[in-house]
Image 1: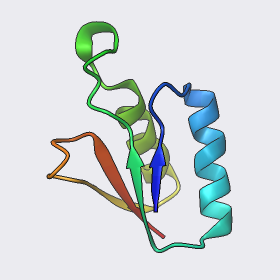
Image 2 (image 1 turned 90 degrees about the vertical axis):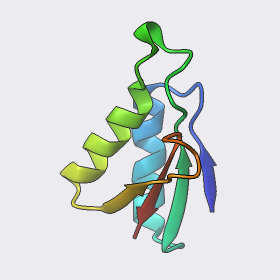
Image 3 (image 1 turned 120 degrees about the vertical axis):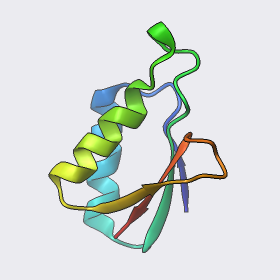
Length: 76
């Protein structure tokens, strides 16, 4: 399953993550967060937010190397 989080706010991203975690319908979910190339100072806002959120919920994840950092794979 792929979830595109481009152009989402941290608030809406959090709501999406909560819904995904509640459903637990898939074991591996690819979260497309982008690399931050269009963010202020070219720093990845959503990527850092998602990683911090998943860590706080003790949810395993890894950064997809093929995407060069633009996709986080979440394991439920």
